[in-house]
Amino acid sequence: MTNPSQAISSSGVSDSSLDDSLDNNYKGVWDGRIGFGKKPVLLVVDFMQGYTTPRSPLFAQGVVDAVANMPPLLNTARRTGTPVIHTNILYHAPDQMDGGIWVKKAPVMRAMVAGNPYAAFCPEVTPNDDELVMTKQYASAFFGTSLASTLVAMGIDTLIITGCSTSGCIRATAVDGLQYGFRVMVIRDCVGDRHPAPHEANLFDIDSKYGDVIGLDEALGYLMSR
Image 1: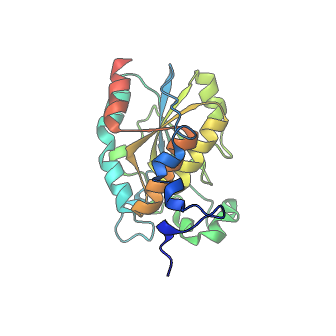
Image 2 (image 1 turned 90 degrees about the vertical axis):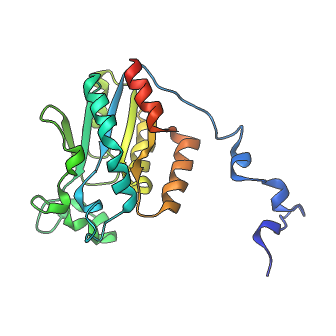
Image 3 (image 1 turned 30 degrees about the vertical axis):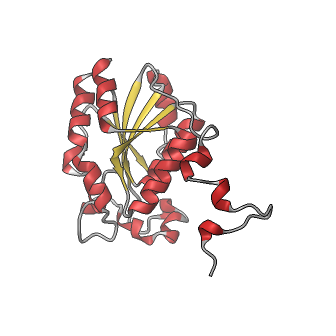
Protein backbone atom coordinates (compact mmCIF):
# COMPACT_ATOMS: atom_id res chain seq x y z
CA MET A 1 0.00 0.00 0.00
CA THR A 2 1.35 3.41 -0.97
CA ASN A 3 2.35 5.74 1.85
CA PRO A 4 0.41 8.99 1.29
CA SER A 5 3.51 11.04 2.16
CA GLN A 6 5.36 9.30 -0.67
CA ALA A 7 2.62 9.65 -3.28
CA ILE A 8 3.69 10.79 -6.75
CA SER A 9 1.94 13.76 -8.31
CA SER A 10 0.85 13.89 -11.94
CA SER A 11 4.11 15.71 -12.71
CA GLY A 12 6.12 12.77 -11.40
CA VAL A 13 7.36 14.67 -8.36
CA SER A 14 6.88 13.33 -4.85
CA ASP A 15 4.13 15.19 -3.00
CA SER A 16 6.34 15.29 0.07
CA SER A 17 8.89 17.36 -1.81
CA LEU A 18 6.18 19.77 -2.98
CA ASP A 19 4.65 20.20 0.45
CA ASP A 20 7.05 19.81 3.37
CA SER A 21 4.37 20.92 5.81
CA LEU A 22 0.97 22.55 5.93
CA ASP A 23 2.48 25.82 7.13
CA ASN A 24 5.04 25.90 4.34
CA ASN A 25 2.34 25.19 1.80
CA TYR A 26 0.35 28.25 2.93
CA LYS A 27 3.34 30.52 3.61
CA GLY A 28 3.32 33.69 1.56
CA VAL A 29 -0.12 32.90 0.14
CA TRP A 30 -2.60 32.49 2.99
CA ASP A 31 -0.76 33.88 6.00
CA GLY A 32 -1.55 37.60 6.07
CA ARG A 33 -2.43 39.41 9.29
CA ILE A 34 -5.20 41.94 9.82
CA GLY A 35 -4.54 43.25 13.31
CA PHE A 36 -6.89 45.12 15.60
CA GLY A 37 -8.73 48.23 14.51
CA LYS A 38 -9.79 51.20 16.60
CA LYS A 39 -13.11 50.15 18.08
CA PRO A 40 -13.77 46.53 19.06
CA VAL A 41 -16.76 44.57 20.26
CA LEU A 42 -16.57 41.32 22.21
CA LEU A 43 -18.92 38.88 20.51
CA VAL A 44 -19.88 35.87 22.66
CA VAL A 45 -21.48 33.26 20.41
CA ASP A 46 -23.90 30.65 21.75
CA PHE A 47 -22.32 29.72 25.07
CA MET A 48 -25.39 27.71 26.05
CA GLN A 49 -25.69 24.94 28.60
CA GLY A 50 -26.51 22.28 26.01
CA TYR A 51 -22.80 22.33 25.09
CA THR A 52 -21.52 22.10 28.67
CA THR A 53 -23.93 19.67 30.33
CA PRO A 54 -22.42 16.14 30.31
CA ARG A 55 -25.72 14.35 29.68
CA SER A 56 -26.56 16.55 26.70
CA PRO A 57 -26.03 15.11 23.18
CA LEU A 58 -24.44 18.47 22.28
CA PHE A 59 -21.87 18.20 25.08
CA ALA A 60 -18.36 19.27 24.04
CA GLN A 61 -15.42 19.28 26.43
CA GLY A 62 -13.76 21.89 24.24
CA VAL A 63 -16.64 24.24 24.96
CA VAL A 64 -16.37 23.58 28.69
CA ASP A 65 -12.71 24.58 28.51
CA ALA A 66 -13.50 27.70 26.47
CA VAL A 67 -16.19 28.84 28.92
CA ALA A 68 -13.74 28.41 31.79
CA ASN A 69 -11.38 30.87 30.07
CA MET A 70 -14.02 33.54 29.60
CA PRO A 71 -14.33 35.34 32.99
CA PRO A 72 -11.10 37.38 32.76
CA LEU A 73 -11.94 38.40 29.20
CA LEU A 74 -15.50 39.40 30.05
CA ASN A 75 -14.38 41.25 33.16
CA THR A 76 -11.72 43.15 31.20
CA ALA A 77 -14.13 44.07 28.42
CA ARG A 78 -16.68 45.35 30.92
CA ARG A 79 -14.07 47.24 32.93
CA THR A 80 -12.63 48.95 29.83
CA GLY A 81 -16.01 49.90 28.39
CA THR A 82 -15.71 47.51 25.45
CA PRO A 83 -19.18 46.63 24.14
CA VAL A 84 -20.23 43.02 24.69
CA ILE A 85 -22.82 41.33 22.47
CA HIS A 86 -24.08 37.80 23.10
CA THR A 87 -25.88 35.46 20.75
CA ASN A 88 -28.09 32.47 21.42
CA ILE A 89 -30.09 30.02 19.34
CA LEU A 90 -33.81 29.74 20.01
CA TYR A 91 -36.54 28.11 17.98
CA HIS A 92 -40.30 28.42 18.13
CA ALA A 93 -41.84 25.47 19.95
CA PRO A 94 -43.22 22.91 19.44
CA ASP A 95 -42.20 22.30 15.82
CA GLN A 96 -39.08 24.51 15.46
CA MET A 97 -40.47 25.69 12.14
CA ASP A 98 -38.05 28.63 12.08
CA GLY A 99 -35.17 26.14 12.14
CA GLY A 100 -35.92 25.21 8.54
CA ILE A 101 -33.67 22.62 6.96
CA TRP A 102 -31.04 22.93 9.70
CA VAL A 103 -33.18 21.19 12.33
CA LYS A 104 -33.91 18.48 9.76
CA LYS A 105 -30.20 18.01 9.11
CA ALA A 106 -29.35 18.27 12.82
CA PRO A 107 -32.43 17.37 14.91
CA VAL A 108 -30.32 17.68 18.07
CA MET A 109 -30.77 21.45 17.70
CA ARG A 110 -34.50 21.10 18.44
CA ALA A 111 -33.66 21.33 22.14
CA MET A 112 -32.96 25.04 21.68
CA VAL A 113 -36.37 26.32 22.75
CA ALA A 114 -37.39 28.67 25.54
CA GLY A 115 -37.64 26.87 28.87
CA ASN A 116 -35.27 24.04 27.99
CA PRO A 117 -32.25 24.16 30.36
CA TYR A 118 -29.97 23.34 27.42
CA ALA A 119 -30.95 26.67 25.83
CA ALA A 120 -29.93 28.72 28.87
CA PHE A 121 -26.68 30.68 28.96
CA CYS A 122 -23.76 29.16 30.84
CA PRO A 123 -23.58 30.84 34.27
CA GLU A 124 -20.00 32.04 33.74
CA VAL A 125 -21.02 34.11 30.72
CA THR A 126 -24.53 35.23 31.62
CA PRO A 127 -25.18 38.58 29.90
CA ASN A 128 -25.42 41.69 32.04
CA ASP A 129 -28.72 43.56 31.85
CA ASP A 130 -27.16 46.28 29.68
CA GLU A 131 -25.60 43.84 27.18
CA LEU A 132 -27.33 43.09 23.92
CA VAL A 133 -28.48 39.54 23.16
CA MET A 134 -29.01 38.64 19.51
CA THR A 135 -31.19 35.58 18.96
CA LYS A 136 -30.50 33.59 15.82
CA GLN A 137 -31.70 30.39 14.18
CA TYR A 138 -28.72 29.52 12.01
CA ALA A 139 -24.95 29.29 12.27
CA SER A 140 -23.76 32.81 11.50
CA ALA A 141 -24.48 35.54 14.03
CA PHE A 142 -25.16 37.78 11.03
CA PHE A 143 -27.65 35.63 9.14
CA GLY A 144 -31.22 36.80 9.70
CA THR A 145 -30.23 39.26 12.45
CA SER A 146 -29.58 43.00 12.73
CA LEU A 147 -26.01 42.45 13.94
CA ALA A 148 -24.26 44.09 10.98
CA SER A 149 -26.44 47.19 11.10
CA THR A 150 -26.02 47.44 14.86
CA LEU A 151 -22.22 47.23 14.63
CA VAL A 152 -22.06 49.85 11.89
CA ALA A 153 -24.25 52.20 13.93
CA MET A 154 -21.90 51.71 16.90
CA GLY A 155 -18.84 52.50 14.80
CA ILE A 156 -17.34 49.06 15.41
CA ASP A 157 -14.49 47.93 13.16
CA THR A 158 -13.16 44.88 15.04
CA LEU A 159 -14.91 41.69 16.12
CA ILE A 160 -13.31 39.78 18.99
CA ILE A 161 -15.07 36.45 18.59
CA THR A 162 -15.53 33.82 21.28
CA GLY A 163 -18.02 30.98 21.67
CA CYS A 164 -18.99 27.73 20.01
CA SER A 165 -18.70 25.71 18.07
CA THR A 166 -15.47 26.42 16.22
CA SER A 167 -16.42 24.43 13.13
CA GLY A 168 -19.99 25.76 13.02
CA CYS A 169 -21.16 29.09 14.37
CA ILE A 170 -17.66 30.51 14.96
CA ARG A 171 -16.46 29.80 11.44
CA ALA A 172 -19.71 31.03 9.86
CA THR A 173 -19.62 34.23 11.93
CA ALA A 174 -15.95 34.82 11.11
CA VAL A 175 -16.55 34.44 7.38
CA ASP A 176 -19.56 36.75 7.42
CA GLY A 177 -17.73 39.22 9.65
CA LEU A 178 -14.99 39.56 7.07
CA GLN A 179 -17.53 39.82 4.26
CA TYR A 180 -19.32 42.65 6.08
CA GLY A 181 -16.04 44.54 6.35
CA PHE A 182 -15.01 43.91 9.96
CA ARG A 183 -11.60 42.90 11.29
CA VAL A 184 -12.09 39.40 12.67
CA MET A 185 -10.09 38.30 15.71
CA VAL A 186 -10.85 34.82 17.08
CA ILE A 187 -9.50 33.95 20.54
CA ARG A 188 -8.17 30.40 20.42
CA ASP A 189 -8.56 29.88 24.18
CA CYS A 190 -12.20 31.01 24.17
CA VAL A 191 -13.71 28.96 21.34
CA GLY A 192 -14.44 25.24 21.48
CA ASP A 193 -15.74 22.21 19.64
CA ARG A 194 -16.63 18.61 20.42
CA HIS A 195 -13.40 17.19 18.92
CA PRO A 196 -9.88 18.64 18.53
CA ALA A 197 -9.62 17.78 14.81
CA PRO A 198 -12.42 20.04 13.46
CA HIS A 199 -11.51 22.65 16.07
CA GLU A 200 -7.91 22.90 14.89
CA ALA A 201 -8.75 22.59 11.20
CA ASN A 202 -11.24 25.43 11.35
CA LEU A 203 -8.94 27.66 13.40
CA PHE A 204 -6.29 27.06 10.74
CA ASP A 205 -8.71 28.05 7.97
CA ILE A 206 -9.96 31.13 9.80
CA ASP A 207 -6.41 32.28 10.52
CA SER A 208 -5.39 31.67 6.91
CA LYS A 209 -8.28 33.33 5.11
CA TYR A 210 -10.81 35.18 7.24
CA GLY A 211 -9.20 36.73 10.32
CA ASP A 212 -6.49 36.46 12.94
CA VAL A 213 -6.53 33.66 15.51
CA ILE A 214 -4.94 35.01 18.68
CA GLY A 215 -4.31 33.97 22.26
CA LEU A 216 -6.21 35.18 25.30
CA ASP A 217 -3.21 37.12 26.62
CA GLU A 218 -2.94 39.11 23.39
CA ALA A 219 -6.62 39.99 23.51
CA LEU A 220 -6.41 41.04 27.17
CA GLY A 221 -3.35 43.16 26.46
CA TYR A 222 -5.10 44.93 23.61
CA LEU A 223 -8.22 45.68 25.64
CA MET A 224 -6.22 46.98 28.60
CA SER A 225 -4.11 49.22 26.35
CA ARG A 226 -7.07 51.11 24.91
